[in-house]
View 1 (cartoon, rainbow, N blue to C red):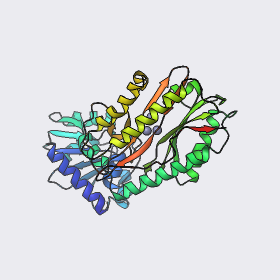
View 2: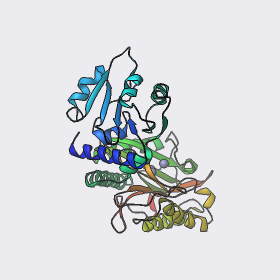
View 3: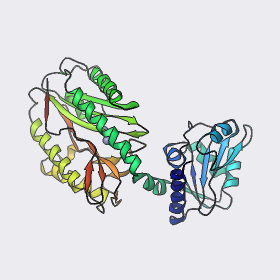
View 4: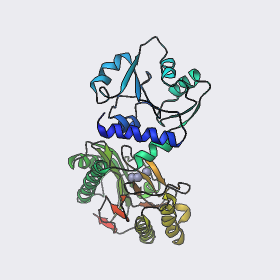
Length: 365
Ligand code: ZN
Ligand code: ZN
Ligand code: ZN
């Protein structure tokens, strides 16, 4: 636990108090890594960080991981309590949660652990901690933004190189393999996902790249990202092999205009859902409204998808440091798909793009 982590734990405790919660319970997950720097594997033996407003944070660990936890960044700064195999860890946790009636648990806490806590704390009500932890994590600090910028640049370089390679005659999975290699060559620790969707396959936004051979006149959606220093990149470009299929250019223009307008609308104070409305209005006006079949974007950081969500119903007021994707798309069954995605960050008076690959239609050969 560094001072940065202690400060995050304090802010989480303040957030819990504001929500009139008596305790937050966090198990191994991105939330725990964010709060403490301790990042063990989530397992059936529970590890619980317990944060209570006005009290010292404590962490309950399995006895066999006590040394691991003590030697880690949490060891010197958090009160560690261990439970042994053969005893009931939920009883031990209930000891740390004595008197708490409003308890929020991290989203990624396993159901089996929540059920165990509920059994031992029948008087307590449980909710999700994302109103506290999601809000904290949504606003990136300087170091987090630097990691996200580096990941974004590495993804841009990956796109610059992939379009220099041949497309027609190669299988989607071969291009996906090249994307994964390029992500790592340009600085990612590892590739996280490489969607390559060609021809009619591109009408499925999360298509799994397979054995289809890319053909002339195909549109090819490439949506790829990797992890760099714990933070993710995520960008999409749609290219076309030679002459585009009928109706493609008009739809592409609508997606490009929607993406540009949505990015331009980003500024502090505007609601997340308003960015979605901006993109959707343009796609609607072009006549493809019902073929824009997903939200406009998602926050990104220690996870590829995290709050805020750029979607109708997410009224989160944007704040400087919030970082998310803007990725409208149009998907025409049996014909083609189009998506353009950049990561952007909210600045003190507007927006900054973390991806700068060209967005004009790229013809590949
Ligand atoms: Zn997606
Ligand atoms: Zn993506
Ligand atoms: Zn995305």
